[in-house]
Length: 138
Image 1 (cartoon, rainbow, N blue to C red):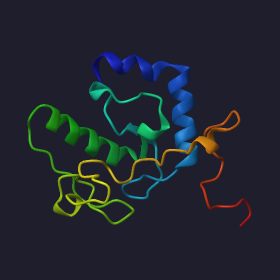
Image 2: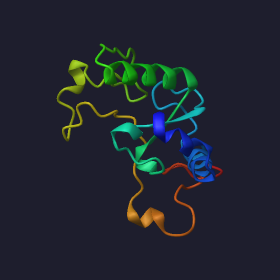
Image 3: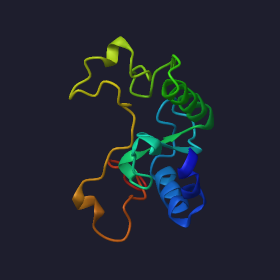
């Protein structure tokens, strides 16, 4: 976290976190209730701290495992992520099944939050209250 630790104490981060969790209440890796918001591209690697395209909602256990694996990799130690995401794909980007991911996504988590299209950004809110395809009362 290092020099980026200060962003977590800002109102801007708290708003981004609340919006992300409201829009994606389930862990992107295991499907349990999400409690943490993870940066897909680490801030140390130039990831955008408040960009919803760089945020992934996770349960605390999955977030701890993922962060531990990323830290190990950053320090040159082997890291292994076990299990699969809600899409059925292995969560370890180095897994052989992810090597030929469509669009060259090898090494990129397949369960990152989808980026809203420019049309979705109209108005004051960037996140809809309900996920796409879900209608209130349906």
